[in-house]
Image 1 (cartoon, helix red, strand yellow):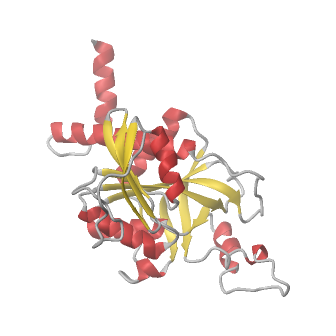
Image 2: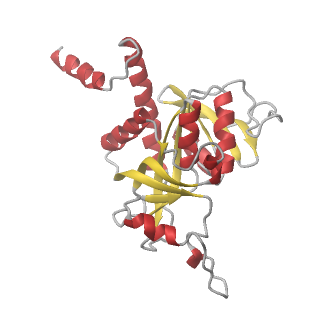
Image 3: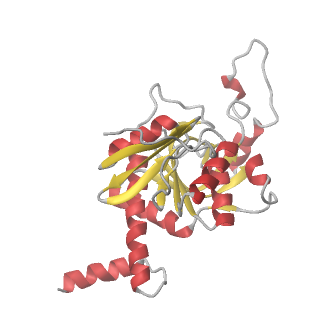
Length: 281
C-alpha cells in the first residue's frame, strides 16, 4: 500500500520529495497516526520522512488528499504549517488527541475547536496574546456536518493550548517529592470557564492559518478527562476523528465547487437546494 519515493529535500524540515502537495492535508501530531490515516484512504504513498514529520499523499473516495505529522507542541507545528503552505497546501485539518476538561467530555468523544485559549510561545512570536486563535468558519462547519451525518458523539467549543504536558498535570510526574508548577492551576481555571479540552498544537495552527490565509480547523479525540482525572486503560480509537476529517474535506471540496458555480460566494445552503431540486425531479 505504501512506499517511500525519491530523496528527501534537505533544505526543508519536512523532507518532501514531490514539488507540491494536495490542497487539503490532515495534520496529526503523531507520525504513527499518519499511517492510521493512510489506512482509511483508498491508496497512499509516503513522500516525506524526516525527524517527527511523516508525509503521505493519496486519495479518499477519489479525492486527492494527504497527511503530515507536526510533532508535539507549537514550535514543530509552526514549521510544518509554513512548509506545507510552501508546497501549495490551502486547507489544514488537525486530527489530534486531547485531554477533556469539561465534565461532559468522556474518553472517546470528539471535540471540534471553535478557538483556543493561548498559552503557547510559538503563536506569541507572531502576534500579541490578545490576538484570537480561531478556526476557519467553513472548515468548522464542514467538521460539524460530518459528525452530524456520521452520528458521532461530539462537542463544539473552546480549547486550551499549552506548551507543556506534565506541568498542567503534575500528579503524573510521580516524583519522590511533590512537584508544584506555575501551570497546574490552568486546568481547573479553564474547566470552570467552560473550556472543553487541553492540548499542545491547535492554537498555533489557528493563528498561522489566519495570518497566512489558510483554512484551518481541528477535531480531537478525548483520550481522557484531565479535570476529572479519568483515563481509560486503553486509548480510544482515532478512527472516528479520521473519518470525520476525511468527510469534512469532501464536503469542503463540494462547497468550493458550488461556490465557484455561484460566482465565488460561499453558500452551503446550495447543498440543501441541490438536494431539494433532485427530489423535485
